[in-house]
Image (cartoon, rainbow, N blue to C red; front, side):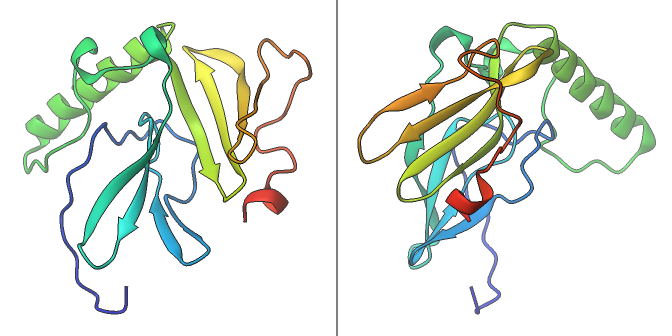
Length: 164
Protein backbone atom coordinates (compact mmCIF):
# COMPACT_ATOMS: atom_id res chain seq x y z
CA UNK A 1 0.00 0.00 0.00
CA UNK A 2 3.01 2.29 0.26
CA UNK A 3 3.55 2.32 -3.52
CA UNK A 4 0.60 4.66 -4.11
CA UNK A 5 -0.18 2.66 -7.25
CA UNK A 6 -3.83 2.41 -8.21
CA UNK A 7 -5.29 -0.22 -10.46
CA UNK A 8 -8.85 -0.84 -11.64
CA UNK A 9 -9.97 -4.30 -10.57
CA UNK A 10 -13.09 -6.11 -11.76
CA UNK A 11 -15.13 -8.25 -9.39
CA UNK A 12 -18.50 -9.98 -9.22
CA UNK A 13 -21.57 -8.16 -8.01
CA UNK A 14 -22.20 -4.46 -7.76
CA UNK A 15 -21.37 -1.53 -5.53
CA UNK A 16 -24.39 0.39 -4.34
CA UNK A 17 -24.81 3.53 -2.34
CA UNK A 18 -27.56 1.74 -0.36
CA UNK A 19 -25.37 0.87 2.58
CA UNK A 20 -24.66 1.56 6.21
CA UNK A 21 -21.09 0.28 5.96
CA UNK A 22 -18.50 2.86 6.88
CA UNK A 23 -15.39 0.92 5.94
CA UNK A 24 -14.88 -1.36 2.97
CA UNK A 25 -11.20 -2.26 3.52
CA UNK A 26 -10.29 -4.33 6.58
CA UNK A 27 -7.08 -5.74 8.00
CA UNK A 28 -7.44 -9.04 9.83
CA UNK A 29 -4.11 -10.38 11.04
CA UNK A 30 -1.64 -9.86 8.19
CA UNK A 31 -4.29 -9.95 5.46
CA UNK A 32 -6.25 -7.16 3.80
CA UNK A 33 -9.87 -7.64 2.78
CA UNK A 34 -12.35 -5.74 0.65
CA UNK A 35 -16.02 -5.96 1.58
CA UNK A 36 -17.95 -3.96 -1.03
CA UNK A 37 -20.52 -1.61 0.42
CA UNK A 38 -24.20 -2.13 -0.26
CA UNK A 39 -25.79 -4.76 -2.42
CA UNK A 40 -22.94 -7.16 -2.92
CA UNK A 41 -22.85 -10.63 -1.41
CA UNK A 42 -19.09 -11.23 -1.67
CA UNK A 43 -16.13 -10.81 0.69
CA UNK A 44 -12.71 -10.51 -1.00
CA UNK A 45 -9.09 -10.94 0.01
CA UNK A 46 -6.79 -8.28 -1.43
CA UNK A 47 -3.74 -9.85 -3.08
CA UNK A 48 -1.13 -7.10 -2.84
CA UNK A 49 1.40 -8.95 -5.00
CA UNK A 50 -0.94 -9.80 -7.89
CA UNK A 51 -3.02 -6.64 -7.38
CA UNK A 52 -6.30 -8.51 -7.58
CA UNK A 53 -9.33 -9.36 -5.48
CA UNK A 54 -10.02 -13.00 -4.69
CA UNK A 55 -13.52 -13.96 -3.50
CA UNK A 56 -13.27 -15.77 -0.16
CA UNK A 57 -16.89 -15.78 1.01
CA UNK A 58 -20.31 -15.52 -0.59
CA UNK A 59 -23.58 -14.81 1.23
CA UNK A 60 -26.17 -17.03 -0.46
CA UNK A 61 -29.76 -15.84 -0.07
CA UNK A 62 -31.15 -18.05 -2.84
CA UNK A 63 -34.15 -16.61 -4.69
CA UNK A 64 -34.29 -13.61 -2.31
CA UNK A 65 -30.91 -12.41 -3.62
CA UNK A 66 -30.80 -9.34 -5.82
CA UNK A 67 -29.44 -9.95 -9.30
CA UNK A 68 -28.49 -7.03 -11.56
CA UNK A 69 -30.37 -8.47 -14.51
CA UNK A 70 -33.63 -8.58 -12.48
CA UNK A 71 -33.59 -4.86 -11.67
CA UNK A 72 -34.80 -1.90 -13.69
CA UNK A 73 -32.59 1.13 -14.14
CA UNK A 74 -28.91 0.85 -13.39
CA UNK A 75 -26.28 1.40 -10.75
CA UNK A 76 -23.81 4.23 -11.16
CA UNK A 77 -21.10 2.87 -13.41
CA UNK A 78 -19.92 5.64 -15.66
CA UNK A 79 -18.91 9.26 -15.43
CA UNK A 80 -21.09 11.73 -17.32
CA UNK A 81 -20.41 15.35 -18.22
CA UNK A 82 -23.72 17.02 -19.02
CA UNK A 83 -26.56 17.93 -16.66
CA UNK A 84 -28.98 16.09 -18.95
CA UNK A 85 -26.92 12.88 -18.72
CA UNK A 86 -26.56 13.29 -14.93
CA UNK A 87 -30.34 13.70 -14.57
CA UNK A 88 -30.96 10.61 -16.70
CA UNK A 89 -28.44 8.61 -14.64
CA UNK A 90 -29.97 9.85 -11.36
CA UNK A 91 -33.44 8.81 -12.57
CA UNK A 92 -32.14 5.34 -13.49
CA UNK A 93 -30.49 4.95 -10.07
CA UNK A 94 -33.71 6.08 -8.32
CA UNK A 95 -35.73 3.60 -10.37
CA UNK A 96 -33.40 0.80 -9.27
CA UNK A 97 -33.41 1.80 -5.59
CA UNK A 98 -37.22 2.07 -5.51
CA UNK A 99 -37.53 -1.40 -7.05
CA UNK A 100 -35.24 -2.84 -4.35
CA UNK A 101 -37.07 -1.01 -1.57
CA UNK A 102 -40.49 -2.19 -2.76
CA UNK A 103 -39.38 -5.81 -3.27
CA UNK A 104 -38.92 -8.85 -1.05
CA UNK A 105 -35.22 -9.06 -1.89
CA UNK A 106 -32.81 -9.51 1.01
CA UNK A 107 -29.78 -7.25 0.97
CA UNK A 108 -26.90 -6.76 3.38
CA UNK A 109 -26.50 -3.26 4.80
CA UNK A 110 -23.63 -3.92 7.19
CA UNK A 111 -21.01 -6.68 6.76
CA UNK A 112 -17.81 -7.44 8.58
CA UNK A 113 -15.85 -10.40 9.87
CA UNK A 114 -12.79 -11.57 11.72
CA UNK A 115 -11.07 -14.95 12.11
CA UNK A 116 -13.92 -16.22 14.28
CA UNK A 117 -17.17 -14.64 13.06
CA UNK A 118 -19.06 -13.20 10.12
CA UNK A 119 -21.59 -10.50 10.98
CA UNK A 120 -24.29 -9.28 8.59
CA UNK A 121 -27.12 -6.85 9.23
CA UNK A 122 -29.64 -7.38 6.47
CA UNK A 123 -32.99 -6.00 5.46
CA UNK A 124 -35.79 -7.16 3.22
CA UNK A 125 -37.39 -4.50 1.04
CA UNK A 126 -38.29 -1.54 3.23
CA UNK A 127 -39.16 -3.63 6.31
CA UNK A 128 -37.49 -2.39 9.49
CA UNK A 129 -35.93 -3.34 11.76
CA UNK A 130 -33.64 -5.62 9.82
CA UNK A 131 -32.29 -9.00 10.81
CA UNK A 132 -28.91 -9.97 12.20
CA UNK A 133 -26.96 -12.97 10.93
CA UNK A 134 -23.88 -14.19 12.82
CA UNK A 135 -21.82 -17.13 11.61
CA UNK A 136 -19.15 -18.79 13.75
CA UNK A 137 -16.41 -19.62 11.24
CA UNK A 138 -14.78 -22.20 13.51
CA UNK A 139 -17.78 -24.19 14.76
CA UNK A 140 -19.80 -23.54 11.55
CA UNK A 141 -22.81 -22.60 13.69
CA UNK A 142 -25.02 -19.72 12.67
CA UNK A 143 -27.49 -17.47 14.43
CA UNK A 144 -30.24 -15.47 12.75
CA UNK A 145 -32.67 -13.04 14.31
CA UNK A 146 -35.85 -12.77 12.29
CA UNK A 147 -38.91 -10.67 13.07
CA UNK A 148 -37.29 -9.70 16.39
CA UNK A 149 -36.99 -13.39 17.43
CA UNK A 150 -35.40 -14.80 19.50
CA UNK A 151 -34.40 -11.22 20.41
CA UNK A 152 -34.11 -7.85 18.70
CA UNK A 153 -30.50 -6.82 18.08
CA UNK A 154 -29.85 -3.19 17.21
CA UNK A 155 -27.44 -3.03 14.23
CA UNK A 156 -23.89 -3.90 15.33
CA UNK A 157 -24.91 -4.40 18.97
CA UNK A 158 -21.73 -5.17 20.97
CA UNK A 159 -19.87 -6.11 17.79
CA UNK A 160 -17.17 -3.44 17.84
CA UNK A 161 -15.19 -5.38 20.43
CA UNK A 162 -15.53 -8.61 18.48
CA UNK A 163 -14.62 -7.39 15.00
CA UNK A 164 -12.20 -4.50 15.34
